[in-house]
Image: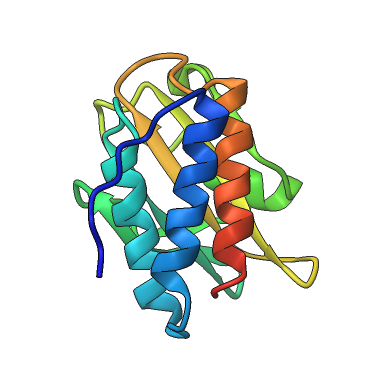
Length: 159
């Protein structure tokens, strides 16, 4: 059913291949947790130089830990707090080059140096976020942001 793919070409080409792989992997499955679990595993396998990748899902006024790959993490994050909570309140992707310079950063893993958070938006409402941390400062490029936003758009077709 699933086999490792060699990602080739430009960064954009590689992310396009990743999105196609995600779509094929999730097609026919309707369970949200299963699909988020496979999405986090796929990203963990694809992305170099990361130390955490996963999802937080909105429940009432806070984000609650969902499927992820990495060390144990903070379970609940208030809206507007930290990078994840701020991405929800602003309804936009946040790329943080140095998490220690981000006001109110929530340090779940001391090794994290940079972060990207992409809101999961369904019917114009944020339902959660994709959160990716790296132990390297300034890890996430403009190309990474575009590719990961495309990944999330593909994922939203399946959750």
